[in-house]
Amino acid sequence: MTFKTPYEFFLCLITVALGIAALLLLAIMYGRRPPEEFARVFTVSLVIFAALFLIVAGYNEKQTAPVFGLLGTVLGYIFGKVASPPASATPQNQAPPTNPTASGGRPG
Image 1 (cartoon, rainbow, N blue to C red):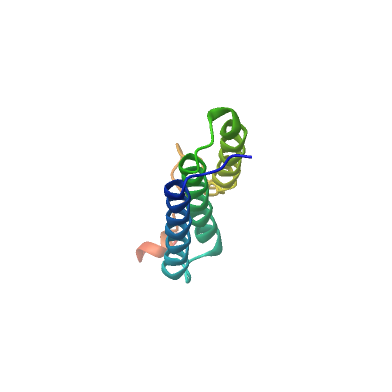
Image 2 (cartoon, rainbow, N blue to C red):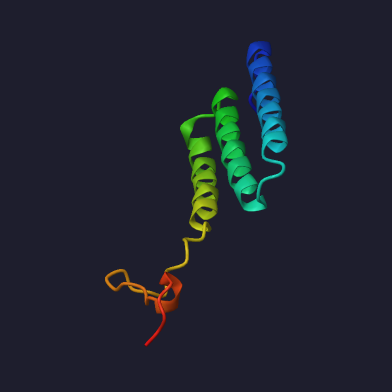
């Protein structure tokens, strides 16, 4: 078990308080937006503050490397889950079909 000095403990508390305040502010700012966008921003912020906490808490690289890998996996999943825009039915090299009545002319 590792004992922390009062200064290290104070830095950890400040980091946690800053993370909670930032996440609450994000919840207020993104509260009315689509849930997917809010989840993405919230998760990225949470991962950043979790990594910052691990660094401030004084863990070495042997202890944090697996956790950083897990946090990176979570971010990859969140950003990989974003759906790409649907492909149009019309190929890009062909012009869409025109409607002769739409231009004010009469057919035939």
